[in-house]
Length: 131
Image (cartoon, rainbow, N blue to C red; front, side, top):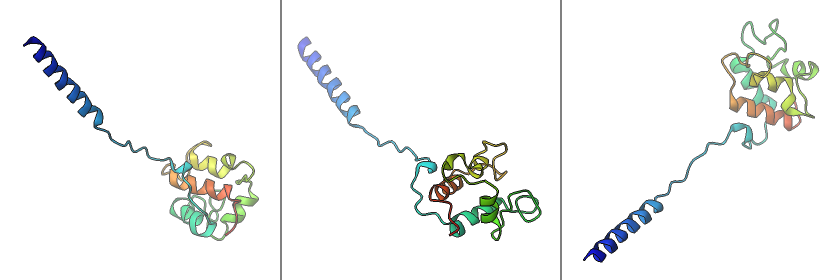
């Protein structure tokens, strides 16, 4: 009778372990936008709207404001002539470093935006064309 209890408890324990081990969940690990493939990034469609949303506002990076002038008419020339873009080493581009907050207050001042940063970095890596 004692052997029966041991076998029964062993079977119950084995079944429980098998059941618990079979419960499996796929862990969702979000991908950092910096490492996502953002595709082809264009200056006019992808980058200018970033500047329009929080950079070229009154008193910031607009005409007569802080350099560089990031209004849609002047942004490309201001960035390229001002040395803010480094296509040879995109991660060290001054524009990207400011946006990440590595040069002081992140730009825009509302806070660093990983998606915007990924788009700007992709644009620089793709040659920083005025497209």
